[in-house]
Length: 149
Length: 146
Image (cartoon, rainbow over the protein chains, first blue to last red):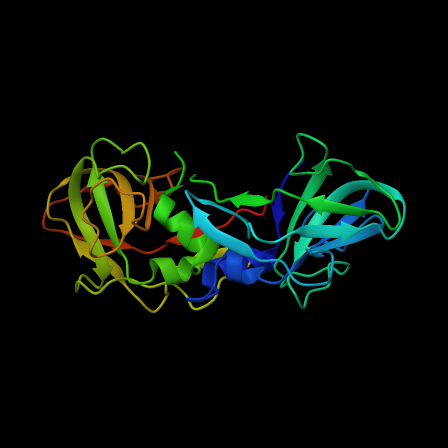
């Protein structure tokens, strides 16, 4: 299990300009929830079955982050991050992608973060990884820490 | 040794702007002696030289674009500085020209080791000679993929 950054995100973090940063690179993006193991890299095409897409309130509105504190940025606290199961399956991994992105395709330019999902000890923990069609799930905690070294 | 970034730098890259935005306009300070525990700590050791564009005092900048997750120095610039005090260079800090060097959780800083080989910043000879001009020909910042 490893959080993986796409080449596109790394390049945007490096030279994305004065309004760049991770917050801007993924502003109003979404989290796609897939079954199975995560791909080798965040540049790779998605693998597994798309089980749902996390948005604000599950209504298709893109996600935003709050301010960064002590090197950690977290979901905007006022937002309710939710997805509804598209098919039955066991959530295995997630991909955070930008508003105009396509998580299914291979890309070396799209800003993405990948990680695995578990009920505990995952890169993203949710209370129930057994996704059921039509049943809502929430992502209550999401944060990303920039390592100091 | 590992490249260490300050809390101010990390917060900037997460929510304010890019690495280039954070580090363009910095000065590269070369130190001898004890290496601070992290980039938030107060500067340690002896300041041997301050690297600017062609030793003019003009802060340095980085390339316009990153490639494959790596941002390099602006290759049109000559990074150099006068060695104010001779000695063995142990570490560097890339800092804002206004950075006081005091402990800080808001200053944008990157810190790493200096050596001939296997260091975060490799130079042809890390024993700097007083009153000589020290060049830095190669400097990159990379973000790991995972």
